[in-house]
Length: 106
Image (cartoon, rainbow, N blue to C red; front, side, top):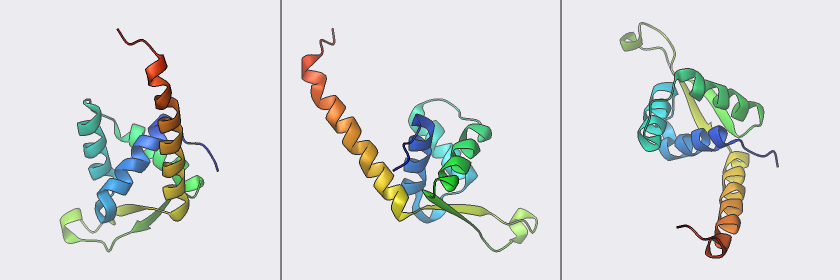
C-alpha cells in the first residue's frame, strides 16, 4: 500500500465524506472549514492528482451545464484502494495514539 501524505489524507477524507458531491469547490470548502483556515485550490488539486495517480480516487466529468457556461464539472470518488488506505491510516493513528497515556501533556 502506498502511504498517504497528511494533505492527501485530509483531501481523501473530504472526498469520502462528500460522496457524490466531491469536486474542487466542495472539497476546498469542507477542508477549509474543518481545518479552520482557507486552503488554496492548488493545495486541493495537487493531492487530488497524487491520489488519482495512486488509484485512491477516480475522476469523472459530469454533463456540461448552462449554469457552468457549458463547462464540465469534474467529480471525484474514493476507490476500494482509497478506502483501504484510509483504514490503514486510521489504524496507524490509533496505534500511535494508544501510546498517549505514556506521554505527559501538561
